[in-house]
Length: 334
Ligand SMILES: Nc1nc2c(ncn2[C@@H]2O[C@H](COP(=O)(O)OP(=O)(O)OP(=O)(O)O)[C@@H](O)[C@H]2O)c(=O)[nH]1
Ligand SMILES: [Mg+2]
Picture 1 (tube, rainbow, N blue to C red):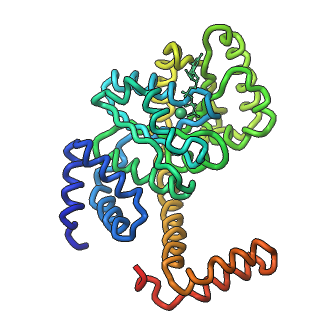
Picture 2: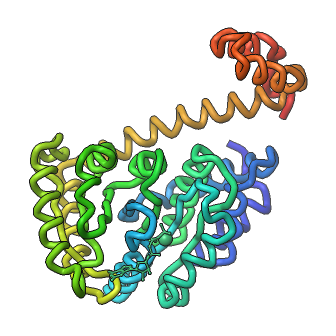
Picture 3: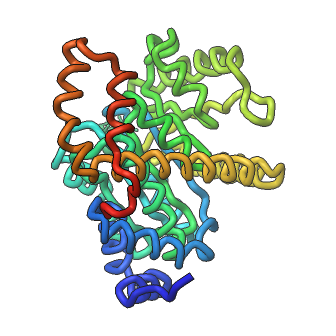
């Protein structure tokens, strides 16, 4: 392999030296879709790969407003107090709060954001889920290379983003609000099946008793569902991110689950599966990028999309037409 270019080498060195500006810059680089940036990003990730893999990768998901950011602030502070270095990445492909997410999350993580052992990176606005997932897994590797030994990925539990996040972490935590009985009826079934751990948040004040009942309901429901890799049902805890109750128990449980999975080889199996799936994701993404960079294809796309939209051409036929239009050597358009 050729020697890294100077920009890439400088960034890699900065990241390895724990320089946050280099880390932030590198994440911006992997977020860029410009072909020359993409080349540098791939080179950077390749250079840093030997220094990745040493973090506990945690996904935290839940409905809007359930308290994810507040919870991550509390958990994050607990974890840095225990001597860890924590990076928080957000995955939010929805335009619901485009532009607002940075401020929203940073104001909720006031203390954590200022902590020298923490690094918080909001989701890039206005991107597709596929794009966000790709950038997030690359950002995760960059954070590991920078020495963060706990990486938390926050995602809002609507649509497909939680599946994407579950595909890039070791352990997936689902936050639930007290009294969310309706969720048990099926709408959240898919996401519940991804969970290694369920935490009923907001177990405080007049919601305390309700939270206890919700926990019991979840234990029952989860007991009937597909068990976790170890044959057991996901555990259910209660916590109050606002008051800090149950945060230590949550962290303790996460640590136990992570070490059980590591000892049993499950963590490595998961990571191997994930790495293979990422590779095919990259292939798909790269092929589509190359196709769209082909002037012949680009000229036809709008027309074909329209025809597919009106039903005059089937999606399958249109896909074939696009693939056939592609000129011989895809790399020549880079
Ligand atoms: N009573 C109580 N309120 C909480 C708790 N955790 C969060 N909240 C409140 O719930 C609201 C939403 O909290 P966030 O942390 O922003 O929730 P989120 O899930 O990150 O929200 P989005 O990112 O918008 O999906 C805020 O007003 C919090 O103060 C808790 O443990 N108890
Ligand atoms: Mg939030």
